[in-house]
Structure formats: C-alpha cells, structure tokens
Image (cartoon, rainbow, N blue to C red; front, top):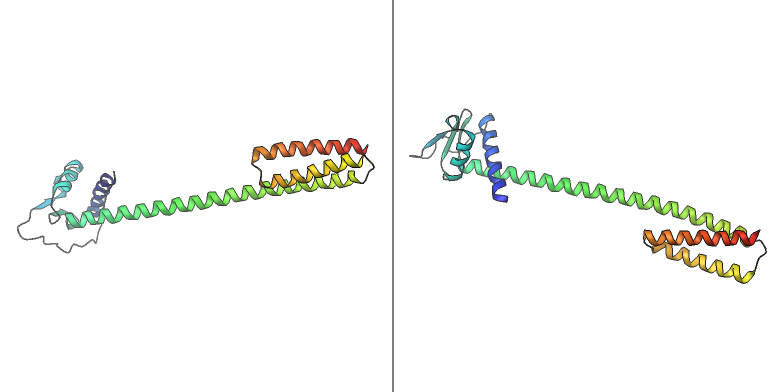
Length: 178
C-alpha cells in the first residue's frame, strides 16, 4: 500500500516539477546515449506507466527543464515523508486537544460533585443539631461518610447510585429533624 502511495506521489511531484519554474537538474544534458522522454507528448497514464519502468538515469524533459527519473522519484519520496510527518503532527495535536477537553470535563464534573457534597454535609450538620434518636443519626452519619469516600473513586454508574442513596439518607435526616 505504501508503494502505491509513493507511486501516486511521484506522479504528482513530476507534474508539479514540470510546471514549476527554476528547478535545476544536475544532469541537465542527460547521460550520453540515453533517451530523452518528452512529457508534452504523453498522456498522464502513459507518463505514469513510463515512470514505473524507466531506469533511474532516464531523462524526462518538459517545458520547464530536464530531470532524471531518479530525481523525480526522490522528490516524490521526500514529499511523501513530508505529508506523513504533517499527518502525524496533526494526529498528535488532535490527541492533545482531546485529552485537554476530557480533563476539563472531568474537572467540571468533580467541581459539581464537591458542591453537592458540601450542600449535603451542610444539611447533615444542620439536621445533626436537632434532637433525634442518637443511634439512628450516628448510623446515617457513618453511612454518609462511607458514601462520600466511595464516590471519590467510583465509576459514573456507581456514583449515580451513591448520590441516590445520599439523597435517601438526607430525606431520613430531614424527617428526623421535623
């Protein structure tokens, strides 16, 4: 799969080279006795086929200059590496953004949970000051403390159950205070 991608890139690079100005070739005259292929006389398909079978030293001529097949292939490989590097950099950047977003969501969730805990504890403290059955109040207080500890490391589904139970305990305390 990588070879086909490089072949496509080589074709694209060659097209770009034939259209770009100011590109020089170390073998502008071509090796003695080598055949010069004129790009202007070939279709894209014919050119791609020729590019696959020509030796590295074959010379390709266009309106913009002469290039060896080796130069064209090397430029294609270089462009392929540049594209791959950009892609990997983009992937890393997207992963970093995702992780930052995930951390921000978790931080917001934790802040909401802390506010809810503080409200529950304030209500618990308020209700603790009213006379009620001390043994039952102590059991509720112990269970509330256990729930608070468990919720710090619980999964989202378990947190929902913990919060539901905390609400039930709060209602019990409210009924006891009345």
